[in-house]
Length: 270
Image 1 (spheres, rainbow, N blue to C red):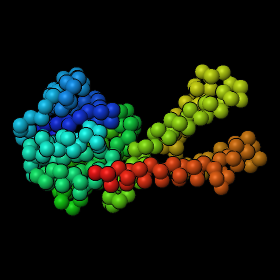
Image 2: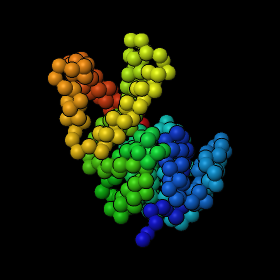
Image 3: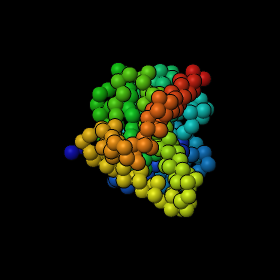
Image 4: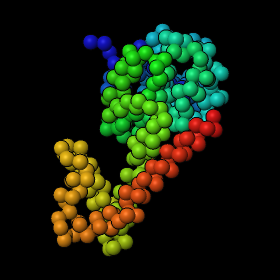
């Protein structure tokens, strides 16, 4: 069986998200000796991983390159990176708001270009990685990238790049919204009289347990919610507030729309 790992992985930048992916890959068997990180600060990325401060003149045969820097840094890095890429070097990007067309314009020598949008739970193998490539990228490369991402969690191919910002707004940004919900649940408990630390523990355990139940259940989350909320009971009374026409569903639609539109704005600025 062919290994899911590239012969060599070259990370251009290693921010929080790329670092989370890297740690998970290493814990799942990727040899740190097969990884190099470009980081101008020279700060270590992970045990056994080589860090270079400047762009190498050449990359080893079989290298896969992943862009893990901030989107606004791409224009500064591209002139040095582009000459070392060729049609045998897959280019992966986790940069929000940066389209395949923009990447191809910056890196015309790369035949296979794949956009990935992970979220922070990839660190534990419970994340989501949206995946998009255009028709110029070979199906074989796309399959290899999907296999490489599998240890990070759900790998979800996107057929239409125009939907990429929407998917990013839902799953890429979604953990932050869930963290905010956990905090709001605890804050409500505190406001109504619970001791602060106890409210935090109860909120976190409740969301964690409910999430596991939702993943394992055969029914939708909507059905599960209605099952908990018996007619005339406490849960139903609370859900009547969430289910108002201007309640949680509308709030989340506005939230995801705002994030999606910001992704489009970021792309337009490049």
